[in-house]
Structure formats: structure tokens, C-alpha cells
Length: 82
Image (tube, rainbow, N blue to C red; front, side, top):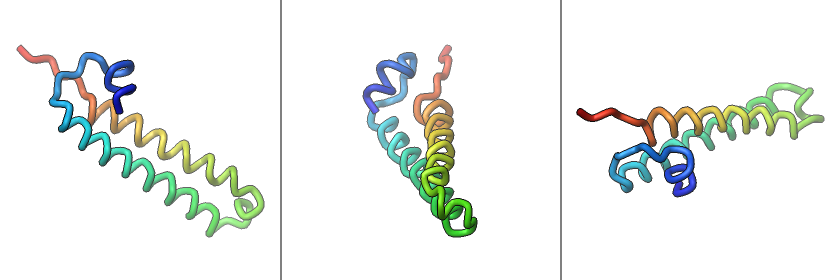
């Protein structure tokens, strides 16, 4: 959380506790997507029984997309205040 806040999204001005709660929820969503995709591919496609790491990789990419989009659009969104 702190690395994202201070290195990737410096310009945000939202209260840190609110950001942390949002970050936690987005992380849970990203993990859920990763897990669901990986398990779904493994359970429904015989190809992924042999190449289960490929199913895990696809799941990781899905979770990564959710985490990045959630962090950028929900957690650390930058609003211009007048």
C-alpha cells in the first residue's frame, strides 16, 4: 500500500485510512478474480490439467488487471479541487 501511495500515485489527497480500506477491498477483488480464473480453467479444460501453471498465469494476469485498474480508478484516483 505505502509503495503504491508514495511512488506510483503521489498526487492523491484522499484520507489515508479511506485509501487503505479501498486498497484492501480492491486487493480482495483481485485475488478473487485470480483464484476464480485459475480454478475455472483448471477444472473445465483438460489442457490446463497438464499445464496448470499456464492456468495460474492467466489468473494472475486477470488479478493484476483488476488490482491496477482498481488502484488507479478507485483507491488512488486524483481529483482536481478548485
